[in-house]
Image 1 (cartoon, rainbow, N blue to C red):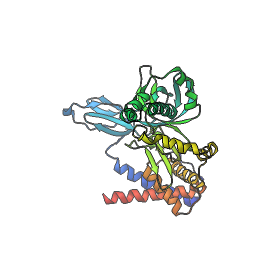
Image 2 (image 1 turned 90 degrees about the horizontal axis):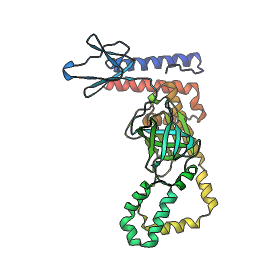
Image 3 (image 1 turned 90 degrees about the vertical axis):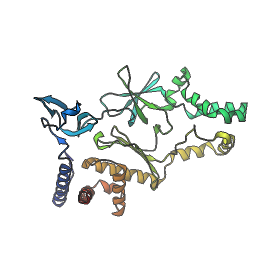
Image 4 (image 1 turned 30 degrees about the horizontal axis):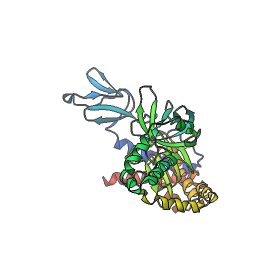
Length: 355
């Protein structure tokens, strides 16, 4: 909420200031024990042989904070988590990036970090065409054999050594400015941040919007992929502050599919014309596009106000705009910002009273 700049009239400004003051008071009461500033004492039990982590230091026999934030404790480790910090990658993080360079055997991605990330050709699945070609060869040999070893063969196809042909065809998979979803693998011996995309849910993102918000507004959870069934869209909350809102895409798991009826599926596909396939792939219905824009505007409102961005809060904002009969562009008006702040202050106040 710091640096909030909106064109408000006098009444809207007073209402917004009142709502923000209420939110700040509720937040300070909730975090009074955990919040610290520089040189504040951190209460610890020295008998437990604590470990002093990031943001802490020992001074005159006391443990003090060296930055502003919230005190976190993990077993014997005590550290201070900064409230407004840049994105710090952790292994397993779901991130969204944009390809900025196609290099030998790797793609270089911009991920809203102090350095670019690297996605190696060997760290992702093979294109569907290669998988299907391998499966067809087994079908031609023996159907019974296919049913017996299809899982093993597919696993070997996914993990096989990449060849010079694969390297030459890298631009057919990803090229510059493509938006990609991947997982953080970790920092390797060369000092680069490496990514991996070894699942069908990762890969190129199409027909949607890419939003950039401060990374500290995205709370890390077990699930960052969300399918909003009522709106027919997919929502991916990247831990690095990149958020994707796009048309729903069915994720097909090749390892789990029953491929015994594959020839019949190929016959059905051959009946459709190429032009129909191209139109179906590039066309997004008007209702879906409006839902994408409405959800994206809800995220923009939350980011501007400095509220945590979760799928539950996003859906509340979208439903609020629908209940008020607002058009998509009206969600970015000053009045809607004030209404959202007032609703959030009311919701937190009620939750505090219930406790």
